[in-house]
Image 1 (cartoon, rainbow, N blue to C red):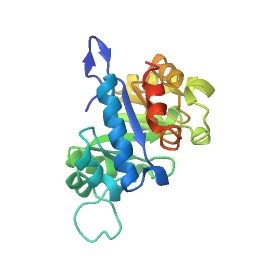
Image 2: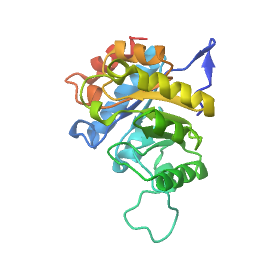
Image 3: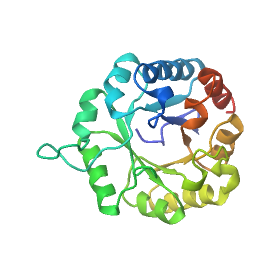
Image 4: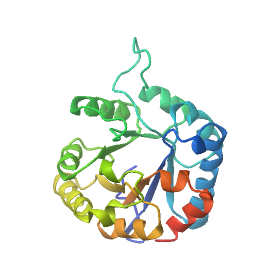
Amino acid sequence: MRWSQSLGGMALTLIVLNFKTYREATGDSAVALSKICESIASEYGVDIAVAPQAADIRAVASAVSIPVYAQHVDGVGFGSFTGHITAASVKAAGASGSLINHSERRLRLADIEASLRACRSEGLTSIICTNNVATTRAAAALRPDYVAVEPPELIGSGIPVSKADPEVVRGSVEAVRAIEKDVGVLCGAGITHGDDLRAAIELGAVGVLLASGIVKAKDQRKALEDLVTGV
């Protein structure tokens, strides 16, 4: 799914919710939260994708029609790769995309490229996570569908990168456009409120990658509604 799809001349806003390994989004709770996301996506006309743990992909994908992404895939195929997560296996479970190189699952450049190739071979949407303008530029050169800019020190802090360090987002957008215009930039780290989402869009991002602000909220539906009504 390329971000350049548009509605009324405006790029569609993509919200990707990473479930991580939070208790509030594991097992049956992963399915319940995904149904909330599906309901909000339908009600407010926004694109929302969810990224549950690998063991929950099949249950989630069977319960909702919104895109389901893996949190990681390895750059290996069929064979003797015990413990690895293959693109083919997550696709068979119902995933339509994957995160790559999240700061909590950091990869070397060669591994990022291998994971990206694996995603492409199975037709999975790819989101390469980066932490600054330089790594964003390098990631864009690999031509994933998206790059998601997330300074690690802001992840889970409640301080949005779009406000704490807006130049990282603005610079990343400019760097990506100079290399590959079809690669969309997502803004991550600290995204919680509608103002955060609006600020990210104003800086040139086409959407956001978020997690704890929604997943660990006392009222997940309300938290997600507060976010989407910001745009």
